[in-house]
Length: 287
Image 1 (cartoon, one colour):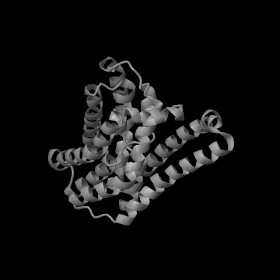
Image 2 (tube, rainbow, N blue to C red):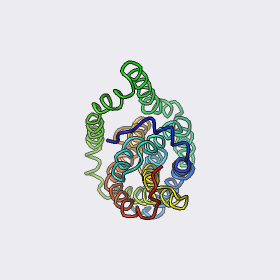
Image 3 (cartoon, rainbow, N blue to C red):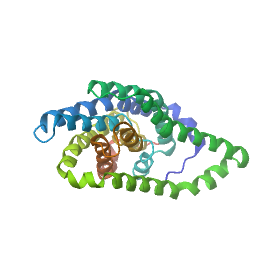
Image 4 (cartoon, one colour):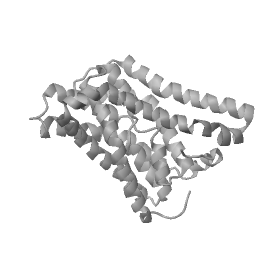
C-alpha cells in the first residue's frame, strides 16, 4: 500500500497537466469508446454467437464499466510503477468527486441510446452508497483522528492498521462476485471470451490515450504511469453493484461487469510491465 505525505499533496497544483489528462481520458473519452467498441463487437462481429437481447444486456454491463474509472486498485498499479503517491491520491480523489456528478448522467445517456431503460433513483442511490458514504467517511475519519492525535499519528500509525484490511476487503469482494456468477461462467464459457474481447481492447486503448499524451507533455514517469492506469482500470465494485441493482444478480449485464473484474488484473499487470519498460521515454525529474 502506498504511503502518502499529505503535505506534498499541496504541491500537485503546481503542475496540473497530469490531472487534465486523467479527467479528459476518463470522462470525455473512455465511456464513449467503451460504448462504440462493445456495440461494434457484440452487435456486428459476434452477431452469429449472441442474440440481440443478450447483446443489449452485455452492452449495458460494458457501459457501466466504462463509466466508472478506478478509485482503489489504481494505488496498487501506481505503487508497482513507482508512481508519485501524492499525485496519485489527487488524481483518484478528483475522480471520486467527478463520479458524483458525471457517472449517473453518462450511464443514463449511454444506456438510453442502447434502448435500456434505467431509473434515475437506482443510479443515484448506488453512487451514494458506494462513493458518497465511503468518501465522506474517509474525510470525517481523517479530520477526527488528526484533531485528536495529530497528523503524524494519522499517517504513521493509524493508516498502516488498515493496509491488510484493504487487501482482504478487495479479495472478499472478488470471492463474492465469482460465487454469484460461478454457474453462469460454467454454462457460458464462449460468451465470457466474447465479452472479454472489447473490454480488453478498450483497456489497452485508454491506457495509451492517457499515457502517450503525458510523454508529449513531458511529464515525469511517476505521473504518467498512474494517469494511464486510472483510465485503464475500472471501479468494478460500483459497476457490479449498479448492474445487480438494475438487472439482478444472475443477469447478463452483471455477468459482463464480472468479466471486467476477471480480465482486469492480468491486463493491468501487462500494462504495468509496459509502463516500467518505457520509463526511459519520460524525464527523470520527479514533481
